[in-house]
Image (cartoon, rainbow, N blue to C red; front, side, top):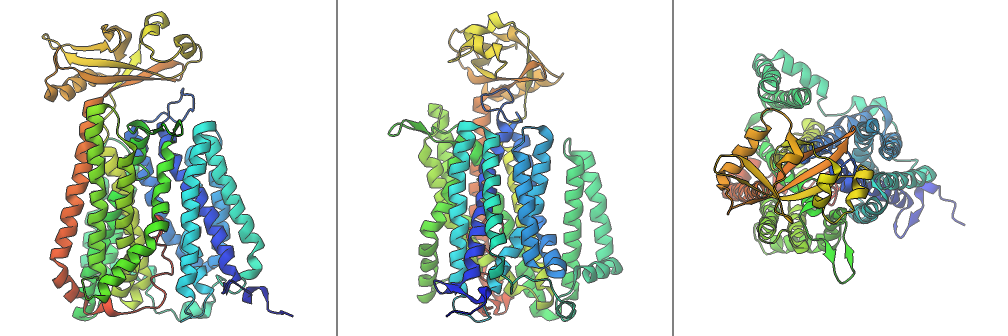
Length: 634
């Protein structure tokens, strides 16, 4: 008769608690990635469309997406500290789970206040859950247990299965029944995860418990409080910090028109991080530690560059899939929802994770270059080359008016191959370089660097979108009926629904901008008025490089949405936006490839600066707290 306590029981050769954490994380990732797949699309959807959203401009949506994904990482830092010092991982995961249930549930409410409230709750929930559940997986195994890495591999399968299935199911529900039903499905997924976690507590009684005061007292790590005190008491660090804090206010106030307060807080955070890094460097002992710290800073920079490009996935590429990709599959007579493409990355990881790992093991066995820095540089290059396919997509769109579905499929493939080369080694390499007493801080700074990369992604995406030229509808319904394409005009205006008019734009000999409706060829300048004094001059400056005329016209869309009792719209010059996207994709390719090559050229001196840290083997660090397939904690 088996009399073992529940927490000592095993299933398929592993602790039973592993499978509790597996399904908890599977459903948590289902909820997070399901919501992430439709978030940007929801922000863009017109208020008066058949599937109404927030009706925001692309730039604003991408900016919010960047802030959101950055905060998910940054809040993981205090989330880990709270677990380590106060609550323990087990209780922190429980609290994080309920915050996520609340966040996804609130997002399913069709009210404006619910959007920001839901995002805030999700950020707090992920911050409490993500950095701690992986640590609990590691705690299931004794130090040196050979099953540990296999246990993490099983755990990672749950992450990727949850992420892949979520994008498809949530994307389908959101497309067919409405965005808020999609958010609601994500909430249901998180509830299932919590149910599994609650009923599985008896298998987890020995891991993730509250820390004892004795353990805390014997920790070798330098606390954040001690670093902060040293920074404020050192003249050099204090002077730099004061200067950076002053710039944190001056730059947003003087040079930014929007999100001034948010950027002030953002720059203050970066200033403190810089101050911390200076303080740590001054405190290091000897040449070896200081040399390794320099390589550590470069590793953080690689992390920022990588995620700054990679994280276009949920933002800019998601929009491209929605607006410019031909997603119709004639074989199935079905148009694939744009959110489905977010399942490609986790699916590719499941398929190619082992082959890529075996390739690097084969390279190392043959005595070829396979150092961590080299892998990270190659990962950046391969990921960047994925955007070559998006360059081709923009060229095809310019020629045909739509891009083929396979460009995104190939782009995500190279992004994933690059991710599998760079991400698995990044955290373990940084941990090997960090002085032992600063290990916890360096892990926190790794999260900060990843978060900064996500914010950079949002800034790049925002810069790829043309600023809105806003207009207001001034015509009556009977004047517009003939211009509402493929719709019953009567139904559109009866129900105050969104509509788009396709036009050809050019500047005539007198310098006036003329809009001609495509089907009828009629001048429709009289149906709208410009909003703002600068709108018309901005339009003229935007089309000037194209030298438009009656023989050289630009395809332009007048997009109208019904808001607050009236039709308002924007002028979208198709060629101008396509050129911006082309420059963005080509710029990412050039920068990432050049950056990766530069790191490879500096490989020998960088390896010398590590002083053999690459050879250090730290049991479990490659796995614990790090998830090969997870965009959250990498």
